[in-house]
Image (cartoon, rainbow, N blue to C red):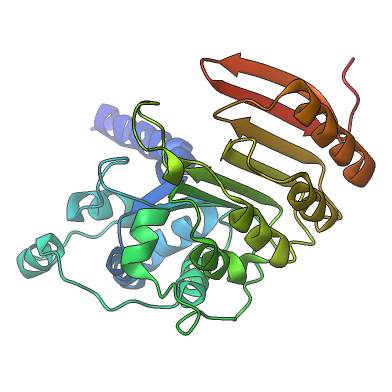
Amino acid sequence: MKDTSEFATTCHYNYFAVLPLIWQHLTITNTRELSIVAHKLKANSSWSQRAIQFVRNISLCNKHQHKKFSCSLAASMFGITSTLSEQQDEKIQVSQPHEHIAQFGQHLFDLFPHVHSLLIDYTVALQNFYVSQQGASSIPLYYTGSVSIINYESDNAGILYNLLRPFKNIRHLKLQTLPVISLCDDIDQSILTNADIHALTSLGLNELVKLELSLLDSSIELDTFTKLVRSLPKLKCLQLEWIFPPTKDEYNQLRHVVEECAALYPDRMERKSNVLYVSFTNCLSK
């Protein structure tokens, strides 16, 4: 009996030791699954407190990219199993009405107030949120963490603006287009346009400290970059990736703009195949 008790105590301690890892990242594939999460937490106050304490990263993305949300995952994370009827409901792919991304964000941050990283798959966002100007929400969210938009289909500046509009207080933004599988394919949707950059400029991201943009090409006008950098008064890190690297003169002009407007200097440059990666920071390279 003593050995059993000690073993149980050890398991108990070990479980609580790994709780931060278990709870750190939550992935959902649609807004309906967030409602399931909310239901689980409401049914178990003890697990709710752990979620509030430990959840830091949220991903809204395709099930093929991350482990799909399921009733068994919910049971392991939220301490309550689903009934048979609930399990059947969770398996049924019900078409849910769209909602405002600001409302989704508010619900998310109410459940997990310590979240500092939010990843949104653009293709999933189109399936879940109002993205037209008429359906967009202007409700600001006081969220100062990181937002990453992946699989963005370029030249949809209006949609991009509406998706990011509630997140004007963020300090880190990553915008990544659809991956390029082959240069033989039509890659226009994988290259950011001047309109996309103008959308970011018009957001007024006054608190932004770090900005990552991928993928670019030489079609982005220098004046467009100048206005973007000037619109970000607190920028301390700018990371850019080009699918077709700029010429030496084009790069030098851009570098001069970034140095003059934001006092940022190139500290890292990498080339891989047709991609050029450059990082600008507020510290001169040694």
